[in-house]
Amino acid sequence: MKTKTKIKALSVILSVATAVTLMSAAAYASVPARIIPVSTSGDGQNLAITQDGVLWGWGSNKLYQPGNGTSGDAAAPSKIMEHVISAAAGPMHSLAVTSDGSLWGWGSNKYGQLGISRDGRIAESGPFYSDTPVKIMDGAALAEVNGAYSYVIKKDGTLWAFGGDENSGEYLIGDGTAAQPEPVMVLDNVALVSAGGSNVLALKTDGSLFIWGDNASGEIGDGTAIIRPKPVKVMGGVAAAAMGTFHTLAVKKDGTLWVWGSNYGGALGDGTDKDSTVPVKIMDDVASVAAGTCHSLAVKKDGSLWSWGQGVTGYAGNKGYNLTPEKILEDAVYVCAKQSTNFAVKTDGSLWAWGDSVNLGNIYSTPFPREALSGIQTPGAVALPSSAKASVNGKAILLEAYSISDYNYFKLRDIASVLNGTEKQFEVSWDSETNAINLTTNKPYTSVGGELKLSGKNDAQKATVAVSDIYLDGVELHISAYNIGGSNYIKLRDLAEVLNFSVTWEENTSTVWIDTSKTY
Image 1 (cartoon, rainbow, N blue to C red):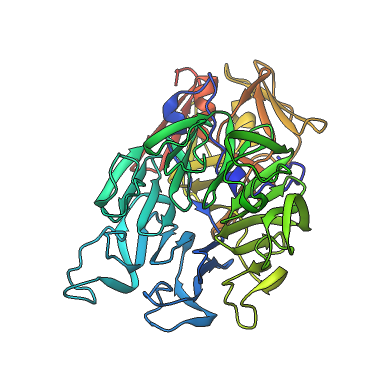
Image 2 (cartoon, one colour):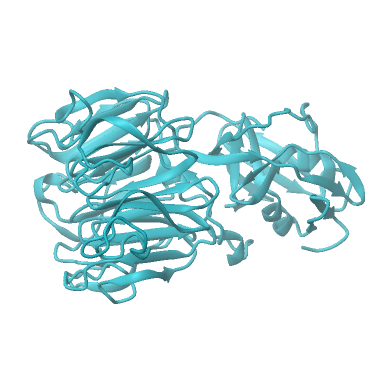
């Protein structure tokens, strides 16, 4: 089903699975593999994924961070690896997730931040480095780094952490310790992780936001300045969030932006320079956010990019101190920031850079966004054509399907069409006023044309989160849904659970069996 075109950026993509009373907790455990186009360490090491899935690195290379087998700084991007969907650049090491769920790391492993032994690697003794990617684990969906720490969200929604200097005094693992040489599980049902200077936040699939680490400026947001070595729940109803060096940003599901922590240089954007230990609202209609040391960035739902905070050397895209948000760019779909380095991706795949340590040829630092590269991935998920056949109440039928993170997604209207006339039939209608898809049970389905047609595509497709709200008999469903090629695709098991029909998988014939006479 075709929907209105709306711009929703990465952090909104990370907030699809929000719990509702009609869904079990297990339905939100899986975290789809997501395309994260650009990452920066903030001090010269940068990564970008192009539209063909190739990961490129450039900038500082003191500790083999670019992962291209060299040790020299590079102004021109060099190829690191292929089939990449997510990458995280750090000052000492970097991580990448490939489309098959493999987590790879390179750079320094001095504190175990690569999660591997030194056997067979570059150094036999002393600090251990790897100048090329080494595999760490399987089943990964998203990665993040923070100094000597590594974080990975697995496809099952569990958050794992490893690395860290036990003498640093920073408790950033999340289990109450300062260092772990091997991956340890911290939380479950996590959709997003973001690491700042001395803090880490995790956004759960039910919209609850947890933060841990230092709290000297109130960046945890619990009304205190007390250090928190374990996750503390700060608020609920969150759709997106970002951790700055000393401050935090969170976007609620209604699009309101809330900020707290250090307000040095106007990083909070509330018109003052006073710190806040509790969340303060500053904007509406926000889709995603990013934060540096003393500045903040927000992409609105209309694609406009706004910045505020310290901009003396171009940190925020303007000169001086900007105490309230100012628009600096149009048509943005993604923004990232660390310390004083910023990158934004536009809808056309162009990469724009500003701030310090950009390190792209003749662009090292600039106070205003400048176009730096083209052909960059835009946010989304990787959808692979599925070979699954379907049987509906014993009748074989071919359906267009895609696999995203090992789950089959089918066209919503195709499913409505094949269930028409059964005890689980439902009508599908589109409300252009509210940008909503309405499902009505026990009503015959009305065809709009194009149902059950096969596209014949055999290559991987870009899947973006469906921006329309979905309602079942007037109750909103936060089920996993993607737009692929202009049509809405849903996870079949999600729909089966809310409509209460049976779905089983037959491995030897690669067939999905749907039986409306049986319960889910």
